[in-house]
Image (cartoon, rainbow, N blue to C red; front, side, top):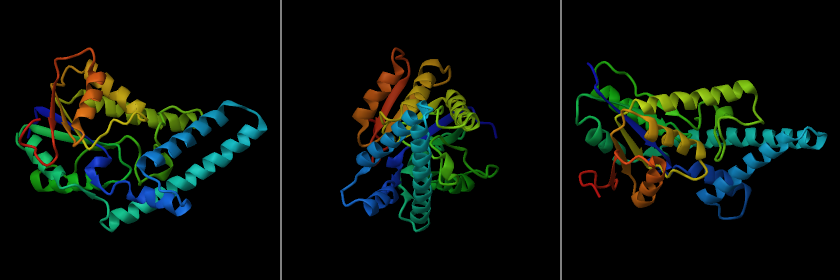
Length: 265
């Protein structure tokens, strides 16, 4: 079967029920404070700031602090993957019911559509759900293509923490090449898409690199015709998309609430 249209679906934490639950469980076990997702992101961003700072200086104290901080973050990443894997196996983490309806509404409604996924999540619930749906819908396709641009639980060492980029001084050149190639492949994939769907994605200001990838796609792609935003907070996301589109204005933006995919807002 030939597919003339390519749809890229970018999913964020909003696509998964209880997405932050395992992370917050870890933080609440370490602190009596009421930690929410924003507070956790602030903590992660501070960790990255410290790594960048310590890696700039060759003195003995900075090198010691860098080694200590890297060890702490390595342990934290392993804990994150352990807790996410546990919650995923127990069904605490699960793809929202809207996801299947999104695929049938915006992808499978046209037999000439082919889709791929980009996930900003560390869990693999979305890709596993997509694989099951693809196996039932296509005879000759076994799984859905999925890029985890922030890493996944399958490789704890390569988790991307908030505010991190594909090139950091505290990594080796080889590690930076792996991250950079992953983002390059994601950009190339997006530039082939006719339609991009943002589902449960906040376009967090801490994720400047994703914003740049989208900006490059939106302003240079010769294929992209339409951007679809599926989010209860669609107004805020639409404003951020408009900033990333500027100065182009020929690409259509459509917004939908997850519970009402039939009626554009």
